[in-house]
Structure formats: structure tokens, C-alpha cells
Length: 251
Image 1 (cartoon, rainbow, N blue to C red):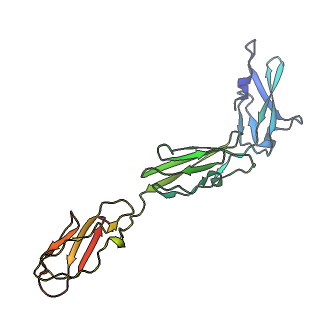
Image 2 (cartoon, one colour; image 1 turned 135 degrees about the horizontal axis):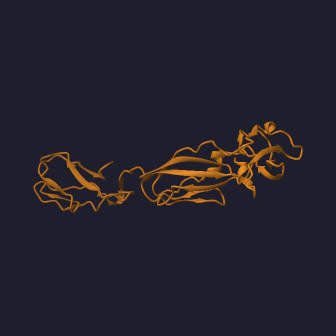
Image 3 (tube, rainbow, N blue to C red; image 1 turned 180 degrees about the vertical axis):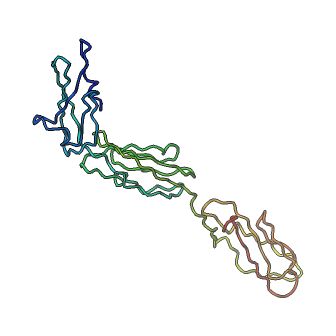
């Protein structure tokens, strides 16, 4: 701190500086500081535990002097304790993140917070409650930065990552009422077409591929995946078991 910059001499005389602590005029060393009398620079590590007023005096070569008070605020900056990385699912609301839990303040100052990095994610920060909330709209990985201010010049900054991934794939589901029951058909005759009527649905809305396998390759029957129909002329006298499978490409 250059206390000498607070003074100017109208006669152009050189000035020397001195400083004392408070009304008791204690030496600066009592709060861990010292002053360079020639330059007026106050240096050191402030060790006071409360707000302190320094009385700084500038004296010219003729003994004329003037004093000014410089106040030092005793304040410990907030400390960032850490905020855990967050893994969330696209399309789902997150559990609100209380950013205050990531900081502490030794002076018990009331902290205010600001958050950056949420742009375009669908999440937002509500300063009234100090929480990050919302629903992630896109698959994304972002670095979120939280800044805590104590209102007395102290601040702390902490970043954490939010990774939004697609929801896990869910397997197709059978619509039992759309599955035809057992059929009795005459060997050597064309069967009545068996309409499967799309017996599956997919909870994720995936496009399904339907296939059918016959327990006898010589059954004479075939499956058309475009129409979901089993047709053909039944051959052989053994029963035929038809296994229909739906695949969404993953499950």
C-alpha cells in the first residue's frame, strides 16, 4: 500500500512518512506492518484480528506535517471446500445443488453467490435460495464455476463438472393382447394369415425390428416383417412353434 500517494506538497518539498496504529499510536509492527519513510509504502502481512485505522503522517523538510487515516478491514476470505461433480440424465430434473455447502467463511460473513457455465444446459441458478436447479435438455459436459463473495472484499471460486447423459435404454415390451393364440391348421393347405398386429411397443420410442423363427425349417411358413403376417402352405405333420422377437438395436 503506497500511503505516500495520499500526500502532495505545494512547495515541492520532499516528504517523509510515518504511521501509527489507532488512537493509541501503537507501532505498525504490532499488526505485522512497516512503513518506508522515504516512499510511504506500507508493507507486511496484516496480523490484526479486527478492523484497524492507521494514522499516516507526511512531514516536509521544514517540519510542517499533515495526517490522514487509512482504514484496514480485517477479513478472512471465504474458503472453497469443494462441490462434487454431477452426473445427470437428459430429460430428468436434477436434485437441487446447494452451492453454499461448497464454501465456508471464518468471519461468519453472509456469502453471496454467482454461477457461470450453465448457459444452454436447461439448468439455472436461483440466487434467492442459492441452488442450481432445472432439467437438463441436452447431452452435454460443462464446467460450472461458482464464485462466493463475503461483501468485504473476500472471494473464493470453485468449479465442478456436470455431465448429462442419455437415459439408459429400456427393452421393448410385449403387448400380450396383440399376440394370437395357438392355431390349428390343415397340412397341405394355405393357412389363414396370422396377423401379429405389432405385438410389441418400445418405452423409449425406438423403431423396432420384428423377426420370426419357426421350429421347423420345412414348415412351409414365412414371416413378412413389413406386414407382421405369417403366411404359407403348411407342410409336415409335426407342430410348428413360432418365436417372434422385437429388437430396438440395443436390447
